[in-house]
Length: 97
Image 1 (cartoon, rainbow, N blue to C red):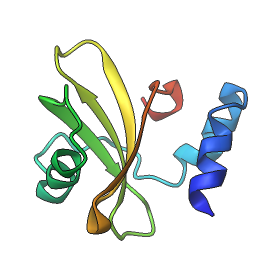
Image 2: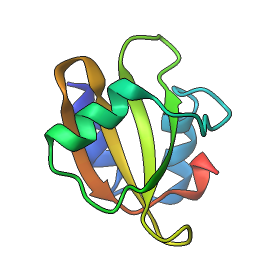
Image 3: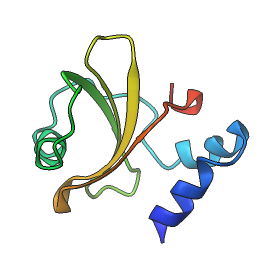
């Protein structure tokens, strides 16, 4: 269900992102997250030489992940690390910056 709601939000105005962004930690974690890295690799996600992530506030293994291959152009993914599921890529949202 969360998948459908999140995907629908990509079609809504930017103000709708405020509700979604509140479900994730406020600060980006720039450290290596092994589980996220393994999920990205298992799904053949390329262009993630550098990534940052925010964990869902309810814990678990759901993350918003921003990836870049050049340090300037970012793409967003939703990563469910425990089951190695990755949704995206999506354009980054200013609500997560």
